[in-house]
View 1 (tube, rainbow, N blue to C red):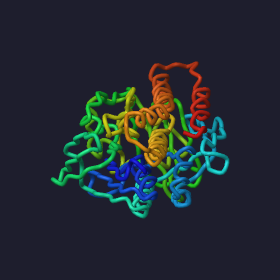
View 2: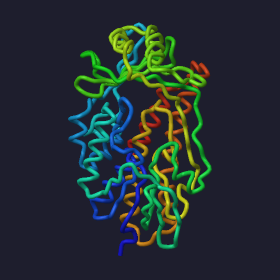
View 3: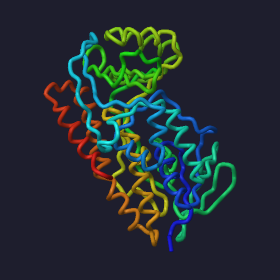
View 4: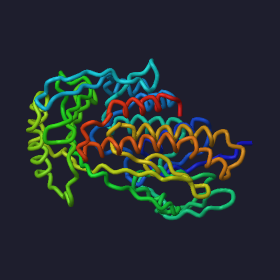
Amino acid sequence: MKAVDNVLVVGAGTSGLTLAILLAREGMRVDVAEIKHDADALGSGITVQGNALRVLRELGVWEQVEKAGFPFDSLGLRAPDGSLLAEIPDVRTGGPDLPATVGMNRPELAAILTGAARSAGANLRLGLTVRSLTDQPDGVEVLFSDGDSDHYDVVVGADGIRSTIRRMIGVDAEPRPTGMGIWRIHTRRPASVERTDLVYGGPCFIAGYCPTGPDTMYAYLVERARENADFTVSERAAHMTELSKGYGGVWDEIRADIADSDRVNYTWFESLLVEGPWNRGRTVLIGDAVHACPPTLAQGAAQGMEDALVLAELLLDADTVDQTLFDAFTARRFERARTVVESSVTLADWQLDGVRDADVPGMMRKVSALVSELP
């Protein structure tokens, strides 16, 4: 007899929805509590690496992702004036039958996963969060923000880097800034943009862009984090425009779209790594709630989706629910997640510290080889 019949997932991001799909399609009762009142993701675009595409194929949504996004298999390095320095074949970490990378609009990926979760039978409860958790020998008693309560065999905190569930269960870990901030804009795609191109140099640490569909892309500029960066809409556009003047080529077209845009956003790079265990009683954390990294390797979403894949496997096979199950989950995921987080932070540190002989290609090869293996 299976030990897990029902699960509460807190958070309807990529990690939480991936888990909900995997469990619900096997007949498990799955509730997903999402504090937002709609299931649309905020943000501009997302770079989905091959190991995440491998999970999306397991979910049965790869064809939808391929159609909605922009696949590519190489990375371009450019000088600040826009001239091409190198075109590097990217590693197909999801296997030879999947692209190396797909750029997507975040709301489109969210819509695909939300639709798949509902089709699988998961119950999405929007505008709802958890007020309290009471761990019991046979499960977790949950009190919701609307006053309802329910009993679950397992609760999963997939509620992001500022996880309420993490704090609620007493995991003493908080994200820390890495010292970098990123300016982003979602904009139209010039015909010449067919992959991610990066510039290391000029007024910013990184200037890059990624196609997200036939007509769209997102562009970004990474600089040293600004303290108390409380910008108005016009100030955000003006500052990103000014930074972009250090770059030529496609940036001349991007700059024209930035100037009058209300779509410019600014955030700090942050990191988080919980040493373990990743549970307290029958409540367990996944994704950014337990490990988060700056997007220098574009592995954040992929690692959370891998968490969901591994946890679903263990929950579906479980004959008992005890600490052994959760220790097995942490053991399967910790070293891989730690390598990704630490490598992502190291890449940022090298740039902040001006390290000129850093082996960036070697670091990227190491991580690509690691995530090419099945989680």
